[in-house]
Length: 153
Image (tube, rainbow, N blue to C red; front, side):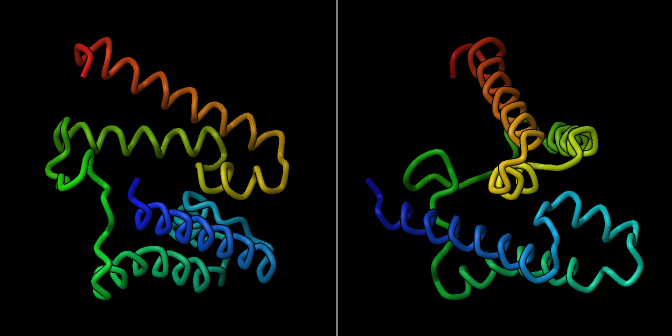
């Protein structure tokens, strides 16, 4: 077992929880990334962009700081020593998948960070239903792609 990766994951989870708690305690806002980005783009409500932009810059700068400090990104590939290359399905498929995720967050009134992290912590029944839907859809997608379409990868 790779303890350093486990500790990095634990530290990351703690930081995500602390940032969600801080945002709720100080501004009364949910740390749902799709809502933060969506309302930043549409500028709703007026004068509410500074914290949204700061939150997103913090989200992006975290991995950059980790790399600059020599921590790398951990093993985010399939196995030890593997490096992530081009998307397995190609760029067009990745763009389509990204658009579908965007549509899903609109239909579900939020994303995994809003429902899965913040909503579950608030014991929201709607967030529980949304998170279970995310998980079941992900499990079914992996099963279909790996075992039915991909021939048992």
